[in-house]
Amino acid sequence: MKKFIVIEVAVIIALVISFLVGKSLNGDDFINYYRNADRAWQEAEKADIPPVTFDDPDRKRLQQVRALYREVFDKYPNSDWADDALYQYASRISRSQEEQFTLFRRIVSSYPDSQWSDDSLYGIAVAYYRLGAEASENNPELQDTGDTYYDRAFALFDQVVRDYPGSVLVDQSLFNRAMCYYGKKMLGPALEQFSVLTNDLADTLMIHEVIYYIGMIYVEQRKYEKARIEFRNVIDSGHKELSPLAQFGIAQTYFAEANYEKAIDGYKKVIDNYRTTESAEDAQFYIGWSYQRLAKYDEAILQLEEAIELFPYNENAPNSQFFIGQIYYAKKDYQGAIEAYRKVADNTTFDYNTRRSAQYWIARLLEENNDIDGAVGAYQQLLRNFPELHQTPSHPSNNVNENYIQKLRSEQL
View 1: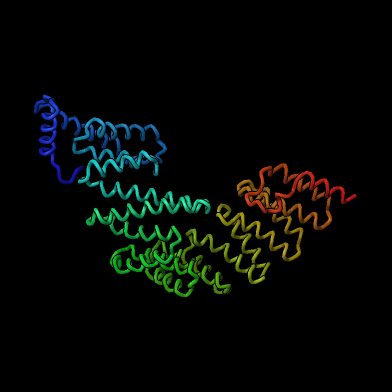
View 2: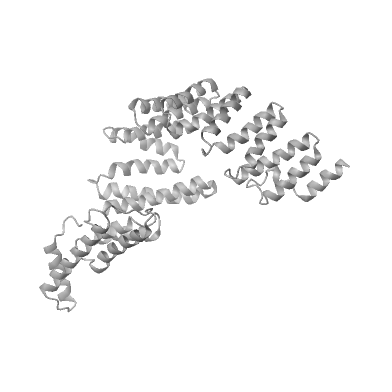
């Protein structure tokens, strides 16, 4: 609902407009207009209890609620509920869709005094930020595209700060401006922004997020001791979501410094203190990788196998199972390596490239051990089960074809 324009003023404006365009609606018509608008809004609100979301499995109800909100702003654009209905409708469509942007922009431009204007502008900014993150994280080659989205997001967050100084979204917008620099890998400007926010947001709960990301910037700058100081401050705060990440971050700094004993201690603290978190899952795998760096191969295998058994759907599981094969290979236990690689190649829940690579190594190990028949069969299985090339063009499995297999056979004769 608009903050400052009350019904009486709206009626007067509508009467003036109607007079100027030559319409002859009487007072009862306008009374009915706003009465009908109220009824339409109440019907939409009633249907939206409990509030429906875009991801609601009851798609029929979602469509019904959206249709009722649309009726309000389509039929009664001059009513007090038009901006509310626009916002509620826009909030129930897919994020980042151009339709959503259009509706949010319509609220900002057509209803500048609406209580939803700052939310709408902020919503567009967040959508652009997400697009930037998706472009940059999913495909490094799209970093320029991601940067463009981050720039748009920054400008919109900045507009929230300028145009709505009293909004509850100002602090979050200030933080997100710094995150745009961080997303663009502009670590210097990001650090400057976050450093300013240590004062501006000192009395808010967001200060812990600021400190955490200062620590993350120091990690990327390889200033590991400074990073640990910031991470310890987060842990001392007792922040439920960030403390496990900060403790994991401390362990990661030691891992990066090749101080694997301290890294293992750090990962164990994550597991002991934050057992039910995703960070604790990840720590289980990193302990195994740390043992491998220390050339403690048996401990590494045991740790990684336990981690895979406990957390088979963790994103680290496929690489860890593959890594077990590499550890066996380093131990010159070729049969153990082949069995480990086969667990990767045969697991259809693992990603294609890792499985293809594992099948290649099975064949290669058989070839290296002069089991030509076994190698030929394994290479044929590679071509049959993994017909698409490995995503990395230079991967050796991409050199395997029927000619390679025929040549291998002929050399045996």
